[in-house]
Image 1: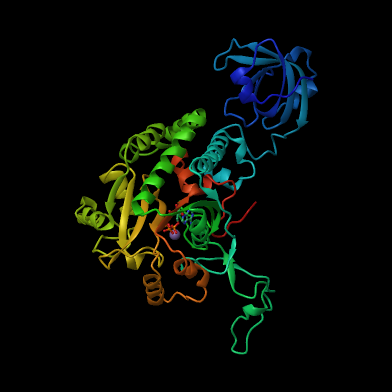
Image 2: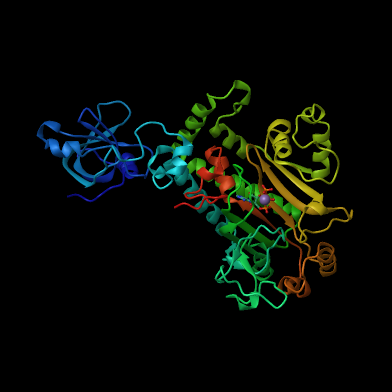
Length: 478
Ligand code: ATP
Ligand code: MN
């Protein structure tokens, strides 16, 4: 038997006349003669021609949708449409049977909901094959981008003592027997007896630890799992997601925004280059899906055009205050079309507002800066106006917030005052405050939600479809 070759490589460079071995899963078997074989290296199937007259009928019967097979044969130019080469099988081995009466997948279009319930098998569809190859490319591109710039990849802890935002969205980590939790004399949970001797949780952000690294290594980034127990059953939230958090010494808010825009463009362009076929497939998928919508709800641009558009245009930059003005004067606000009317300065933007700015008003990605300090975190740098902080959110079409970041407050007195105002325990964050005591410097960073990026690039509509095994309220299957 010749050496096994992956289908992608074979389609790219296979020389006709040579003997090859390919292995994969049967996607279709027509006329007892043509197998469409897929091995996940590409969405393109390889056509295998079976000499059915000289093949044992019992073997032919086992070539069913989903079966794993190994095929050896000669590579030949294909006469049929849709492929340039095919393999004339001389040896067929069934590696794993797949009973069509029991196999949950069918060789027809199945709904995304059905596939989500069968997430263990959905990799075997063209759509999910494309999504996860694109996801892979994007994650590699993120590393490549930062590595080229000399950033250090820093692994921040998954188990932490602090809930960075103090938002109470953290999952507890405990070793207690939950039926018999030790309590103090006053009836409170006695964390002293727990594994870490303190109350601990899964990290909601690696930022605070990331800042510690940046205060010596200059530029670091994290890229790891992040957990939030927010009970938001939306198409943009997961309970477990991956976040990329760069943190840069000596960067102000503008340097921060520039880096974020450059990163997004770099990784999108990387995927367009590396996964052209997959993105063409996903563009077609979206077109088909949108055919079911009324004309006025369909996207103006196709997925590929949207990605290209993103690369060719500067992101719009404006302040929160300017955005509020635009929203207040907007037609949907005047006609009371927003679920949350835009009343005045100081309230947080809802996703419908963010999407109006991006999709209707500017029609391109938007970087919003200088938010009211009341709606942002304690560590953001206070502006001279006494009302706003040097925050920066990047909003994307169809997604809303994709990045949240800021210049950090490096002045100890200002930081401590703000923590006191918000009731954030300074003693617990003594190590964070130390960076402001010893060699503090201006610095900035942001968090990019990786799945929101994959959502944008693949044109999918639900974040649960761009992570292999989504975790969300009432679901941790697989
Ligand atoms: P949102 O308002 O959309 O809930 P957030 O303000 O809570 O976002 P940050 O705390 O700033 O978000 O987190 C940084 C980034 O992480 C966000 O811009 C987003 O891309 C991503 N993100 C936040 N929460 C989630 C989640 N539950 N699931 C997936 N991605 C998330
Ligand atoms: Mn949130």
